[in-house]
Image (cartoon, rainbow, N blue to C red; front, side, top):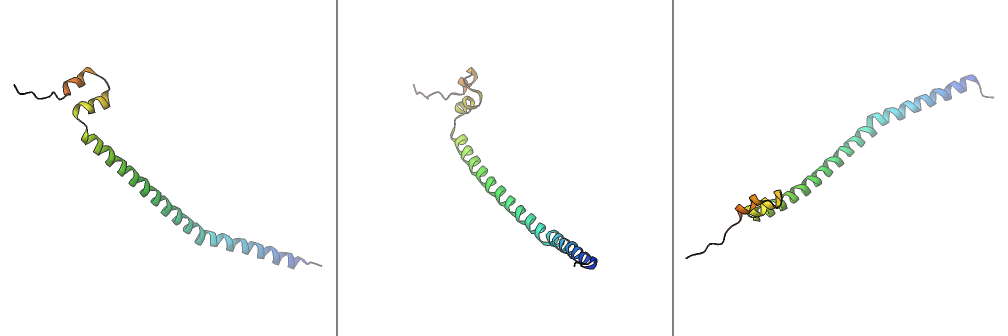
Length: 93
């Protein structure tokens, strides 16, 4: 027959086991998981930042090749004010 003392021992063992698991989780597992997640997030941000920088460089190169007239048309659309920015061909008379 199981005595009261055996039940108390089993209960105390279960509580101590739960405390040990909780302490391990708090001391080892969670900080490691947080550190790993932080490193993963930093790596993702670095990759995204690099992609955006390359895209900006491409946009800058495209904009630098555009004339004033083309820039006006790209940003304002077809407006009469852009016509004054057109480069007129040079003619020697």
